[in-house]
Length: 328
Image 1 (cartoon, rainbow, N blue to C red):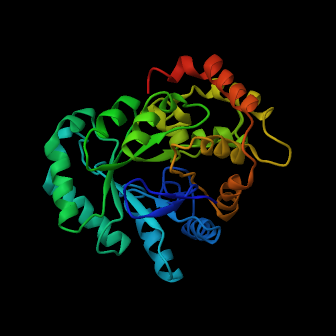
Image 2 (spheres, helix red, strand yellow):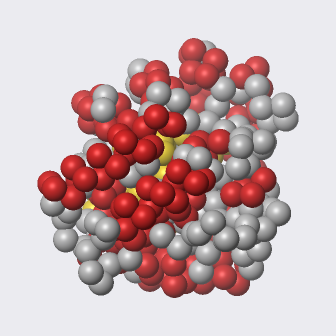
């Protein structure tokens, strides 16, 4: 794996990290044992970046991470978490210093640390990005030593561009994959100019780009690919990257033709993301150790050719862009 400086922070991270949403919840039945095995496999493969959130399994993900890292000992990877989604209702008025500090204190306990490496506002309402006092509160919490740095996880490119206007924002987490190519049009240029780290999430479009999902695939009732198919619980862009399921399956069959022999589609899709030098780290999730090892293998693939990159762009523009490009 390649290692990158994490923007303006004093961390160096691998270009493939571990997304810990799946080991928390909302992906069907994943046992704690499988979650631990997946994380251990990722760390054994050399990954040095873990992304989680306080709402993933109501703290389950953070606690599993803390326990695994304590058991392993040695040099710690960078661990990023998120805050804000515990608000109910999830409204801009709830992003107060008191609430944010409460969420951060809870994550400090869950992760068993004295200071969080990175806390990210968790896809906040857009109005939050127009409230300098929110970022002033994060500055104060950083000065107090509770967080080493802060960033914003966003749904839309416009929100990313607004967030990086705040000088304290060191990172942006955004959906970027073969089915969500708009961030590379303008946002990546601005992020590079400001030395803002980019965390690419939903890299496999909720599994569509693994090539293993079919029309007959069954998703459990507690899997967001079932209960959030139309955005019933949170932004629909988080499920299948916002691509209508049947359209996604059609596009996957065209992408499949581009995958080199001996490679999985998942590894190919991750390698596609790593072709952008603006991406600091991509954070695929894993249900088990085998998937974690497969994600790490993406770094072994040769760079994709200009012809292959052009072909993926054509698939995107013809089939996918009409559904997602201007929406996110």
